[in-house]
Length: 395
Image (cartoon, rainbow, N blue to C red; front, side):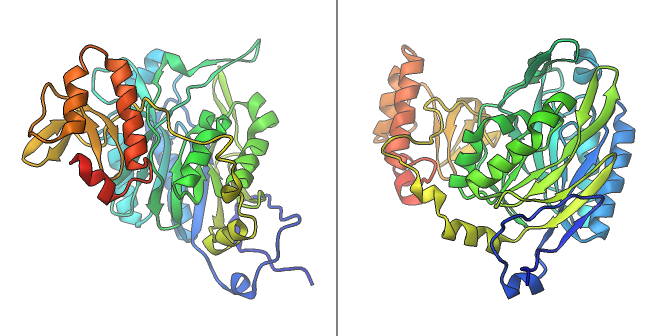
């Protein structure tokens, strides 16, 4: 008798389960948390886009989803650089305010990928930001897209995201959600497997790729890339997608989907605005990792995954408390869960030799000294798996 398959709930969805390991009786009987992946066709009309997405999120909630994932450009897709800049907003603007209210009303978590984020009202470019909003309506994470797409297919596509966007300079640690620990990325990041592998090492169980793949690249690469990230990291991959014609210059491939850690598509949208739902079975994920412990088989004696030695970042706070002294975010150049490194003309208190030595020579040889400091932090504090005991030395 064939092994029972996991529950899945799709809207015109395609699923496959070829050669998958058998499920236990517990898997067959138990209902696991549901997530919804959203697909629609955004335009430059933010009001209409909000109405469409709100309706799809409500539908997802009605069908039992604990978390809904929206695609890149869910707020809008502009027709040119000037329009994109004009319509970009800060986190306190009307678009995110509306989604925060919706999340709180429905008691649902939201992954909002590809928001045109203005850090300041008069910036000349925006960040392509992937946000997580919890069921209380709080923005709990903001990832800024690291890799900006440039694509030229003569006569078909001419896309250069650098004209409108600022590349992010940090990788966020996985975010704890009701359906698992989610690693945040965005669209073109899919082509760079190192980020996904780093996030998996930090505990990610879900890799989220909100996207707006072009028709040409989508046909050729979309599904193979998503399956590859799922298989090599033994993670769920959730990929919300734009679809259809947005304007005269741009068409998106669609096919929003959810891929399980075995590389099987367990939910997929077909044509037009829709949602697809699937269960996130973390028991199965961890069984796969135990049965084939790929991560423990890496040859760290030959190669290794590591964050770059020069970790320029957008600090997570405006002001940090250093005892009784406030540290402004402009002084912070390195941050982990438990510690920060910052620059200043002189140390606040005697006896803090690490900061003293670094700060007194910083002005004359900034790049070399920052790289040296970064390596010291990596070595002494075991970044990114820093411990409170080790990091206490710097405080």
